[in-house]
Amino acid sequence: QVQLVESGGGLVQPGGSLRLSCAASGFIFSMYAMSWYRQAPGKERELVATITSAGIRINYADSVKGRFTISRDNAKNTVYLQMNSLKPEDTAVYYCNLVIRFEDYWGQGTQVTVSS
Image (cartoon, rainbow, N blue to C red; front, side, top):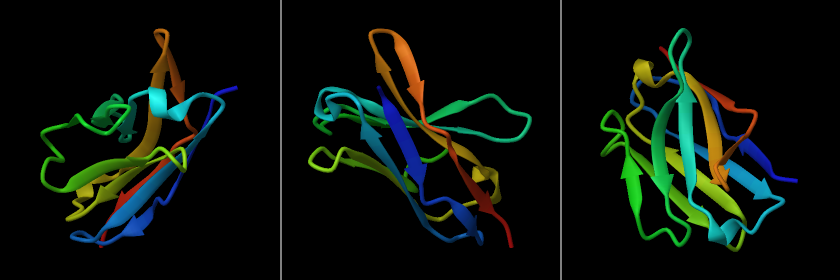
């Protein structure tokens, strides 16, 4: 079955960087677009970035443009989120996501806390 396992979260100071990873299994990874979402306490889950199956098209939320970079390695069945210039408002649980035949699949999430 589909499995998505995020890692790489943690506590970082404002202005710092983190790299999140999402290891995928149970489906043909190279065929599907992948996304990162985040959910801050008391807020709705929001889309952060999406990358198409071959990595040709990428979209970002306005709030992270110029600071975050999504990428993927189809040989390793892994999608990444490089996060630079982190701000306290980036604090959230970050989730990996894909959609197969209109059904959403989610990982367990990884906590990112930006605080001094």
